[in-house]
Length: 201
Ligand SMILES: [Zn+2]
Image 1 (cartoon, rainbow, N blue to C red):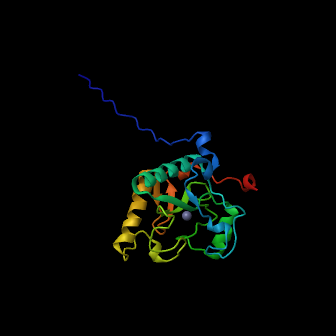
Image 2: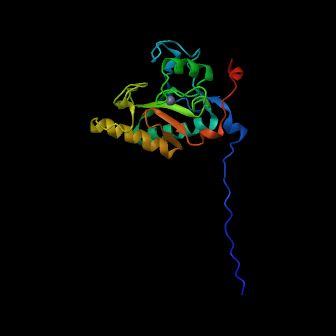
Image 3: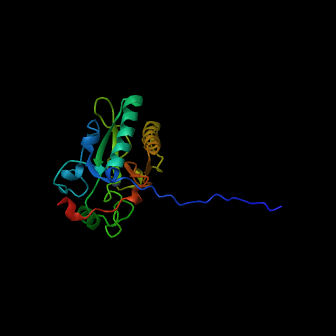
């Protein structure tokens, strides 16, 4: 008797997002309850210079949708809201940052391009119902070991805040950078290219 074995054929599935999901959109148009505090549009950032001409956050639509779902979850379960410091970052800005801090733990090399340059990463924190930022142990863009989610020499409250932020963001399709507690990449960031600079000038 001839036995026939049918092996499942494995395909490498790459999620191709629709043109609509890949669009770079204003976060405000997706979720106006996420607080925007774009430090790079002010002098209050590690360069001490105004780098962005506009304080508006842009993201790939599917990334903005996922962030909005995480924000809704934080609001409904904890009465917290997301505050965002940065989303899409034009490549020419990446070059300026790299010239100031050429350290790949904290700033992506513009030759490779970053997830921010693809519109697929966010820098965020949480605020309570009074708009006060929760304590995560360091400020945004603190380029020390204390910024790492693996740094544990903090109070329980800070460690709980960090754990909550990470858990909820992972639940909604993001991964956390292991050197910055505030930085989350959208899981499918590789699907998005780095837009041509001319598209935004
Ligand atoms: Zn970041």
